[in-house]
Amino acid sequence: MTAADWLERDRRHVIHPSHQLSDAQTTIWARSSGVELEDVSGRRFVDGLSGLWNVNAGHGRRELADAAAGQLNVLPYCSGFAGSSHVTAIRLAERLVGLTDGTMDAVFFTSGGSEAIESAFKTARFYWKALGQPAKVKIVAREHGYHGLTLHAMSATAMGPAYWDMFEPRVPGVVHAPTCYPYRCDYQRAGETAGQAAARVLEETIVREGAGTIAAVIAEPIHGAGGIIYPTDDYWPLVRDICTRHDVLLIADEIVTGFCRTGSWFALSHWDVTADIVCFAKGVTSGYLPLGGMMVTRAIKDALDSAAPAKRWMHAFTYSGHPACCAVALENLDILERERLGDRSAEMGRRLLCGLTRALGDHPCVGEVRGGKGLLVAVEFVEDRATKKNFGADTGFASGLRTELMQRGIVTRTRPAQGVHPAPGDVLFFAPPLVIAAADVDRLVAAARDAVLAVAGARC
Image 1: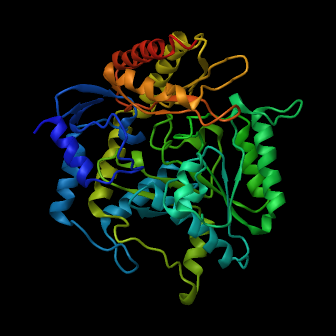
Image 2 (image 1 turned 60 degrees about the horizontal axis):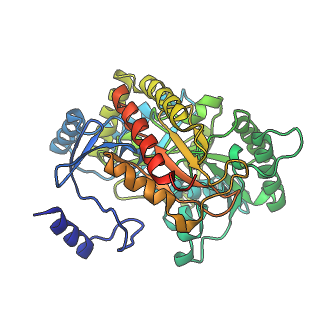
Image 3 (image 1 turned 90 degrees about the vertical axis):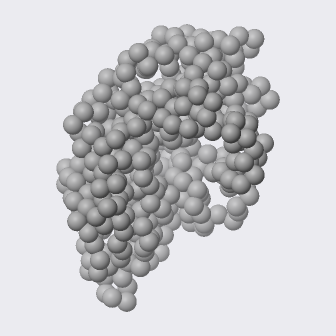
């Protein structure tokens, strides 16, 4: 079978996420190892996005495969519904709670991130109903946030109309507020930081909607798919204070940022902030098996535990706490801890950020190089640095950049400009596996530099 044969069979029979049959650059992957992917033609690429932000421990880890096989040989499946449990899920729940230094108290397992978000939204509603405040049902999400594409999660995701238009109407009761986007903050008042301005408009949104109608605010500590957007350091403490004062739950979407991606187990810890619900997925198993979940505080767990039988938390998934997935997660956490991949992420993240800043920071088409917390780095491109004018959609800047990177042996993601300023410009993402070596970091930098020169040469 040639690559063309596989591609034709793929086009005929597979419906892809974000499906579009005319999408170019489809690659049929065959195998992977370390930080590299190999396609069916034998070409090798550095994985610049850890699969889909999730292969934190790197590809080809035999110990993770062995953990899955070992569990499958002992207990391949059992129900996680009330009245049934197993040792591996219990051990994993205890381990995860321990990683939060006791700020979280209990864990509900899902098969992935979107299910984790849906579970958090339903749980927030349940919590307030259990406390006698049934009107608190709204979710406040932020612009440029990505929270998944099941219906309620999609309604919270705010990355442009393409995610909504063909699936309307959205779930009612989801409200969006501006995020903390220092490079594109056009609503600051005199004397305000971008973080103070973003926190102010968030509070104004809560007040306008009525805190008595809002169940929770959901936010990524650092935006992932929306552009790897870093907040200012004063932002998260302000958000936590706002949620506390207005009696609104804070849901931290740590699906991309969790499990050492930012140099810590969870990203909110960088700002000494704790949430009421923490959603996780992706890096918890390094993508080897599908697993996600949410962690909740003691107050929320108490509400679940004390509900009358007729008011019980009737929420469930067949594969909640799947034994093999939990076994892989436990082994993955051992790897992350034993190999100190949080420290490595911080070290290699600094190298990547510094390298991209040196290589591209002065380029006339580069608006901003973003990073600073682990292996989560982005470059945003503009047509004019002084005005932050974005390239028009007809230029194909982002797609051209991705093509040039593929030709140089790098696979990652780019996002095209979302309109005129203050909408985001074209963005290049890097979030490689945490096991990446310095030489491969330097290879990412060199390829990015050369790709930008190739694409921007006639435009800047």
